[in-house]
Length: 339
Length: 287
Figure 1 (cartoon, each protein chain N blue to C red):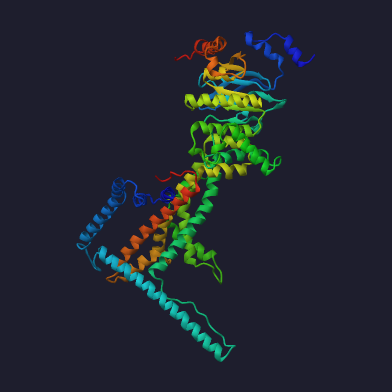
Figure 2: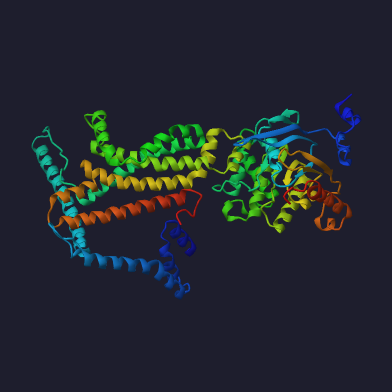
């Protein structure tokens, strides 16, 4: 039982919990306590020191919107944002309730009456924006992966193909998302025309921008991984005369999975950074827009709220990376990845 | 006049004492005039030059030589992984021109797929080869039978990373045996193992060989291993453009026991002959 828990914790990157588990089962308390001090105590100490420095330094900086917010102001704003979110949800519920009541009354008077169901159009709260951003980044990232992995595998298998598209990759890889954005926006407005669009145009624009920037690390890593598979593993496939498709799926891809995942992790990280910038510039809904709106708003709370967003962006980026790493450990044979 | 008779009457080209009687056995695997060149930046590199080798069914052949002499290249040509520039290989009347399970290879570094268990590593080969010939149940029994042969049935559901180097090599051998090869090719199969594990595996191979009577070509750089396991030892000259130097026939009773053989004068004579070839006649220039 204990080893099982410990293995799961190590698998999911929560190895700092291990000494706590060991301690709770009474395993050599002294050693475990000192272990806890190093894996939990030291990081906590560093965070405390950072908060202290931040609080001290922030009060020294005077801006036109007041003092730079310290940790306590940011915490207040976090609570404020949460309350706003709850209030907005209540409003929404109330709106739908009223609408239903109204419609029910209308139907009671005249069963044939035309009833209208309207969507609630309140403003997006901070938490709505987070969900929008997450949805966008995953969509863009998945499209990118679906394009990059097959092309990468093909490039890894054929030197000639890799040689052919390599210059294109090298040229497009360093392009900033902000340069892509106007083109993507124009193309999406021109091509994506429908009376009843399934997705918002802004969503498509942001997602495609993310795709264009997060494509390259996965593509390059996949190509290199497939090209550098141990020759003997390929020979095993040749000796048992596997069909080349089987060879790709049973040998080439599993063998390169650790490196493909490293590429995917980098891609998702880049995608997340790119998305925030794209949202800011294009006013597409999401965390980037939230930051921009608060900046334009210019109230005394704005800086605090932006700081909340900054921390949230960092935290979510960290969680995304953790998610990919855990996925990698579960799916690929390289259980020691990322250490 | 049959081919066999013809060979008998013809004087052997190589006048060493060992090549005379072997012509009595029908040739099963025939390497004729095999040469290979690899393109390099400085032009073509000739690794093998005119390698001729005739192997009978059920024979255990060792190929020995200094490192870099092209031993593995010979094996890879027989396996079909490399193509000879000139000359060719005929197995059982058919020319070898591509890799295939009839010439199963045991690779030097085991080459197990790390994301599959030992069982699955054998299974991937069995499934590919006996797709329509065996039922699911027969395949399972066949996989387990082969893992049992190499004494790995206790750990068959473990991953390669969880077992020792010797055990990995056992699974590699099981995978090769499961292909029911007409020729088993082993490329320094025990080279990366410690002495005790190696001795253990050599005994296992001898045991399996006495059961199945496979035709085996083994690459080695270990003189004792060659004498202990082989019916014939093929000694190769130094590269580049390496060729077959001498062939030594080992006529020791089977089953062979390494302890008893340690003091056997005949065994030591064979051993001395191989050593002489390697360290006197084929001494490397820089040594």
